[in-house]
Amino acid sequence: MRIETVAEGLRAELTDPVWLDTALATVARQPAAIARLFPAAGRRCGRWMLTQPPGWSSDDAARVLLLTRLPVKTEIPMLYRYGDAAEKRAVLRALPWLDLPREVAEPILHDALRTNDTRLVAAALGPAARHLDQPAWRHGVLKAVFMQLPLAGVADLDERADGELAEMLAGLAEERRAAGRALAADATELLQRIRSSAR
Image (tube, rainbow, N blue to C red; front, side, top):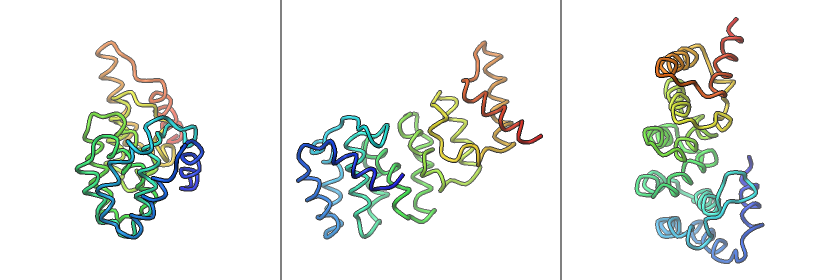
């Protein structure tokens, strides 16, 4: 997805884009203003769901656009650390466009994957997951299955799925069977696809 898609989707539904335009220009000139403007995006741009991009809210889009305008990205870990769940999700969604070094992006993703917030786990496994090494990514996918998140939202799933993930999924499936429960259909299909491709 292009950042232009995010901007177009938001602008198509904002009745008054003046605050957003002013905020974008302000953070480009005065990066420290992000600490004040980033939390305010929900109040100023609303929190309704957008048509484009699917699954995004208006405050998600506004915050992502603000982050992409920052000339210096040093504030981003702080915005994630001290943000509420919506602010953290926006940081995770912005990561693909921020060109952060892996050592900055990875701790943010690891923190999101340690939470029990399905919105953060799902966002961490989206396009930003390219910053995760393979073991962390596998554990994230397993957590998504455990939390019954749809695997369709996991970026590069078929490309990154491997034998070790298959073993982990098979172990979880066995635990579920022993407890009289079934693995989600999309996880079962993924396990079958990995096994088929290994033959």
